[in-house]
Length: 414
Image (cartoon, rainbow, N blue to C red; front, side, top):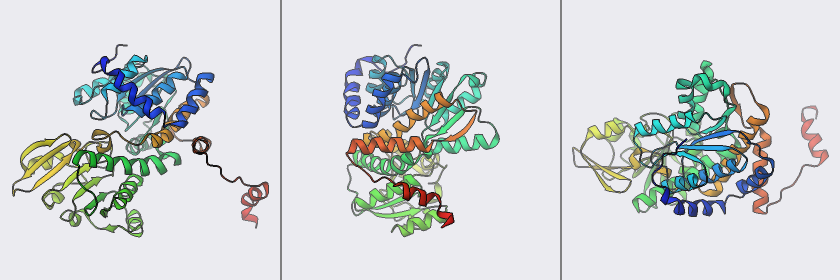
């Protein structure tokens, strides 16, 4: 198949980015060496529909080193880095991705990825899985399985499984402890604020930050905001998570009450229109809105545009919406995933954990060949990734003695 990319001449800059993250991803380094010897993916075609930046690129190269033929497409139009994609093509990986592609081009790219007829795949958000089920259903029986990267995708897979519509074996990588404890919490928390600060060049300390949603990603965003000196308000629909946020030291209130108080608003829910017209009409002048969920649906952009008398780009990744009363509200990165659309995504050390889980889960699918359905990452893989990471950090931990293990196994008899 012929790649569709921006410019192959950009490859040298892409190599620089990939080599930088490679030096900080010891788990993938370890697995790359193992895979070169074992070739677990020999003769297999692996498709990757993810954010195409340097960390993803290195994972694709590790899978290729394991014997696979690899093709990639972007899971978000604004997160694709054209130089990184060019470097992948130079390395023999097929790519269908350009930064800033239109919605029509985006769909065309993932259709090309489906035409690659993968044996295995990694998805981010569920678009590729949905396409396979809707337009390529006849070929599902030939797919060994896939892995899902993110919370939004797991929500979609759960819905498909509940209806009996999931016809591919899928591993819920997002649900692994080595994923959500670190990627969702520390990765999202750090990369979201890195992107906001890069885009705005404004101080965080002393501002009021409103975090909408207190799942693992919301926890990370709120924690980092607090660490940067912001006052943090959390809004929630789940009473249990609301109490957790309160006990973590944050103010909790409905969004319409937080709207006139906040300086920066970050949506982290995976749901639709969580910032809607009622909150928008109450925002203070200069309020900044951004989204850290997978799809650009959490902020009702149509309602914001309808309320505005003027919309203009004031600098890269910042659009100013002037409302009828003269207030200005700023939207970052077109409401798309801010940490990747306006930044470089999670730190390399964090994605090393997640991508270690991904490649080992692909190997698990090859080895076990499960029936169609949604599966969790085996605990042994979670522990394997953690063990490799600790070794790379030079950290040793205690081991249970035989006596301690026997005690734990017989606790109910004590």
